[in-house]
Length: 188
Image: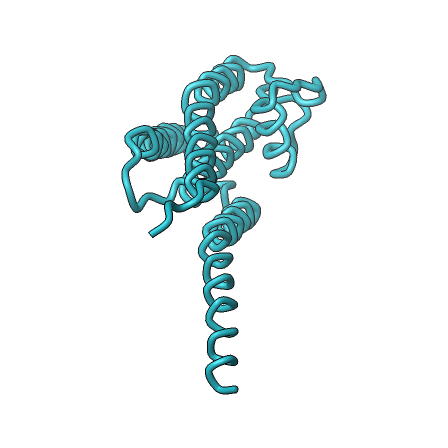
């Protein structure tokens, strides 16, 4: 009876470890995204905006450039099929970070009178960023000022270039990964 119990436990452990190996990047990514969104709502961002325009623009540009470089790096790694990469973990986190960078920028711009009409809270800023990203445009929050319109244009262009490339690479990565798992192994 001893060997039978041991043999029956091995496949369960193997299946459990395979399931864990498949889902842990998604769980870590979801936890990371929740942590970033929580930080967005809790960090003191009031010091940015019209009080410190040079610092605000510097941080905005540096953050976008850094995220763009990291996204492009992931895209290239997926296209080249490099081993031991984790685009399923990294790309969603970088996409979330880019959304929060734009939301923070809109929040800062809303402190200037007449720039963003209807944007009063952090949730409004996140909402406007996602509505712009999805190209829905309900019209309840509108960029009236030239600076707000410039940032909105930058977000649209940034989304078309970087987020679309990253989403495409991520889709290709998952498609390739799943097709390799579905192929039957040749007999030994």
